[in-house]
Amino acid sequence: MPGAGLAIGHPRRKSQKMKWLVILLLVLVVFGVAVAIYARSYAIDAAALHVEPADVTPPSSPNFALAAGDTARTNIGDLAETAALLDQEIGRLNGARIAGDLAQGHATYVFRSRFFGFPDVMSIRLREGVGSGDSFARPEGETITYVDLYSRALMGFSDLGVNQRRLDRLTEPLRP
Image (cartoon, rainbow, N blue to C red; front, side, top):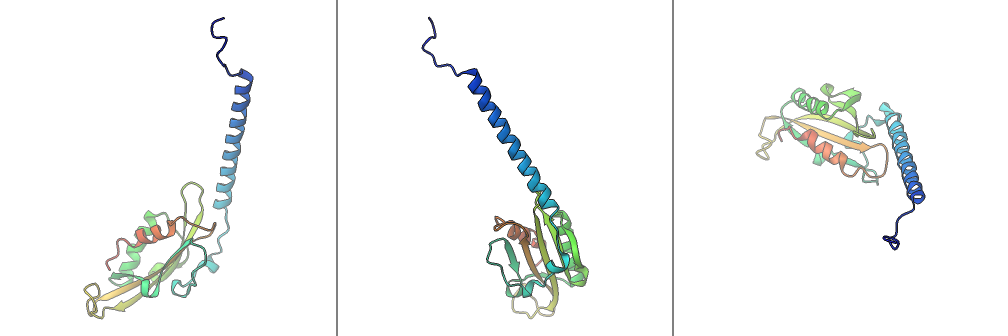
């Protein structure tokens, strides 16, 4: 008999494997949808999250980015100009204000990841100063706005660097 020695998979075994693969795929899809629903409906306490970046004690988890005090970002220009630049960039990054008003110098925003909608929160404080002539970036008498930022993930232990990248992208248009 030709082909008698060939091992041919049993059709019933193949259909059982396919059945379990489909079940596994459905379980993963249901789990993903459940995580997305939970993340998008996560309650955000705006009052508790509206903090001064300079007063923050960094958490022990690596799910944050902080630029405040000595590490604050700077912009050559007044508070209104800096607020307008940051507002424009926040819009590009799909941020939604949940507290404060950046034009007044202090605001907090929520940003969500694209797929699951995990919430990250960023608090921003603007402080005006005058350049002391200590460097080319801070000419004497020039108005400078210091930008303190604190961005953090509300869910999970690590943000995989997302908050630092967002902070960097947000401050790209500033003129240090």
